Image (cartoon, rainbow, N blue to C red; front, side, top):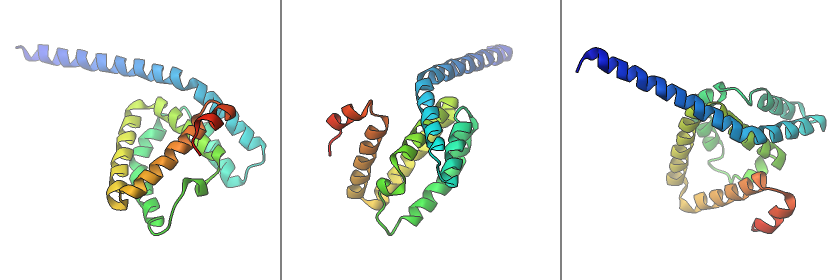
Length: 175
């Protein structure tokens, strides 16, 4: 086989992969657009309610960077530092997601994460794999009973955050 033919095949394959990535990028953007609108509405409501300066800065960061592809790229590198410092900080005391922040802040964070994932799906997948590896490490270090408790709390929180409506949530979420 001619070396020029091999190079041409790889160039065509690379071009097809790039085009496919941009098609996937567009599909993700269309999929998360309703969530981005919900995030903008919620962020405006939080800022209008007179949030503390720290909380307002966090909400403004979410709103300013919702379409940025760099967020997931930076998250790949910053994740391990933040994860292990957080794990060390909460290593000797009981930690609950309920104690960390309120529901609106958690909802903003989840909506922002979905928006940032859609802005850069390739780095988002790498970030998701990093989170899975970290979760595995936590399971090994903390033991299965602590992980089951944390997972059930996370599932409850995610159901409350992304559920359809307050009326429907009260019927579907277990106490």
